[in-house]
Length: 408
Image 1 (cartoon, rainbow, N blue to C red):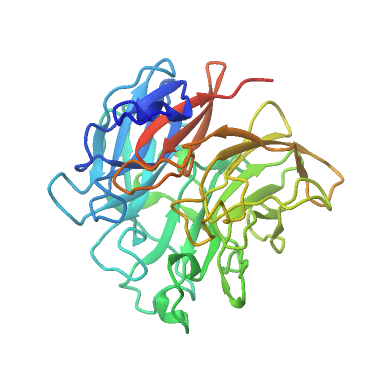
Image 2 (image 1 turned 90 degrees about the vertical axis):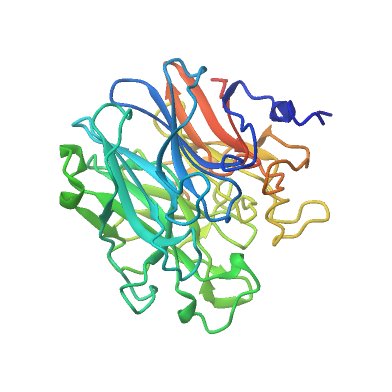
């Protein structure tokens, strides 16, 4: 067992080290780890950094690599500066235009809070025209509101995007996001954060490949009904908990979306019109009429991998009960991390069928970092770069690491 704090990052046997914090002060919390390819062919790693999640000093940083292995020290982009609180930038996600401009959109803290200080905010945007080496000052992007928002339009929305966008059937960038309802709409206060009313929504960037100025970006807010995907909270069907949507484009041009819930299982939905409308969410199974795929309330992304109609699901393979821990113990049941490889089935009700899970990463239940969690591979990302498939993952929301996905 590794117990040396200086070597604890080795516990999950990573192949690549992107970032090891030197201290917990300002840099100890590292999550929402999105690695992507720049217009000039380098790898860029974008993440949310803080002293401790929820402490009020979230900021975005960026590191780069030319070979998948060696990474620069992260550079500050936007958000709270060292020694300060407020003015947070959280949960940034990149969009790379065909024109070559890199945009980063993020949850911008304006000091007006509804649900939470790091999930209530406007949509901020910075961009770079030199491959991510310098960035503009922040702009605000208008967001379409709905009946789940606070009634006063001066109070920002409660939302998070957590994955990189994908291209839809017409080649437009689309991404899912979680929207939490304003607490003023919930008659009974939930037991804790996992019981707040929420749903999965989507946004599509219609003209961003042209490289427009932020004020000229056109976004379509989806689905068309402005309600989103809902999954009933156990015992309270009037409450929905459907969060952190992850989407892939199927060979038949439908969008396939998976979501975390508080039911103990992953749920999924399908869209035949690029997110305009969606099927009623159902429990995700290994195959039609097969066993449901267990998952605590934790991210469960799906990625295209290994050829057309092939996918990889990253999840934790328990329903929230893990040893003595229960579903509400989210700092303790988000482990180990498993992979399951899926194949498109043209005539199936559930169009992706999954193989039996393979344990891929674990922390052995050991807690480190300022948050004191033992979770692993929550808010990861995936790249296939120069012939190397890599899952990029936060380890206990502290270390940022990578592990190769072997072709076999």
